Length: 106
Image 1 (cartoon, rainbow, N blue to C red):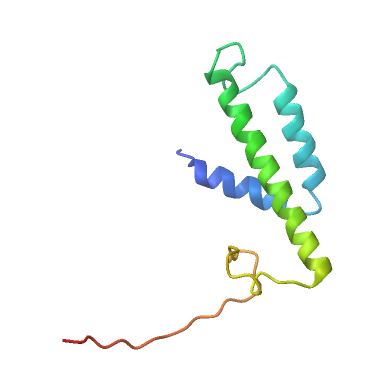
Image 2: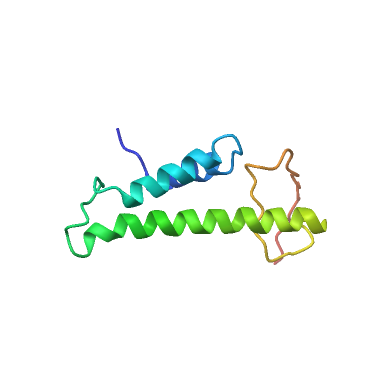
């Protein structure tokens, strides 16, 4: 059974954005970072810290994004107001489909 890195990232991101499990995921991530038991042991000079740095980066980026979303909700600004932000299709309740008929020009 093959598990892709993208699937694990999406699972982590989905679970941490669920308010019911957010505290547990953050606590579990911090315990994993402080624990001597890792996927790659910290005794190996560079490879030991790679999984910790990647997990810490994902944790900080997700917590920061949740903070940005929260502050936007307080000010009433939506992601549609700012065209530079990425719209998360999985969290939107409905999506708009635009059907376009194209003709070739010669």
